[in-house]
Image (cartoon, helix red, strand yellow):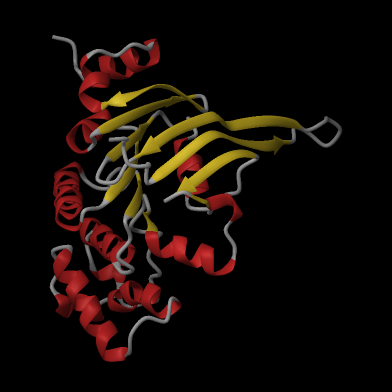
Length: 264
């Protein structure tokens, strides 16, 4: 029996930016994403790993149509993501959501927490006011927050609590794919494990699929079933997490793992 089609299919993705060097000099081209291909199946968590500037965040934003690529192919449930318009793009927004890196800047400080979580429901015109209020309370409980906190502003929460609000907002539309862009890198080390454990619990309870962007291999080892290592815009190694961590083949992967384990 053939394997089921991947939930997300990325093929030969390229993103180039023009870079000007001065008033009288010709602009050069920088290739931030260079022929990137990968697959992600339902229930998997793919860790897209690399140092700052490796192209991993740009790749994730292209997947969600937050950035337009120079060339390549992205398919979600078989649909051509890059060709979606109107209702098709709105449907993608319901099926695939993003958790942003910085819980300080990703939440509008002028909005109450409950309104932030409710906003996607309003945008997609889902339910009446009473239903939305109950849905917000349900989402607060789901991420480990008391629904009574919905009336507070983001500044009244800790960093970890703000990130939980961001996760609740991302889950409001019941997506099947969650793209998490360095979701714990801005948090204190003591809080990171709590948020990672929450993400693992939500994956298991809700049957979510994750594209997890990270530079910290400890985080990836804790959460991901599969790993793709990016370096200078390209994927240099990919496979099941146990395989990549246990028997790395590329020198760049080996260097990342060497830095992960302190010498004795």
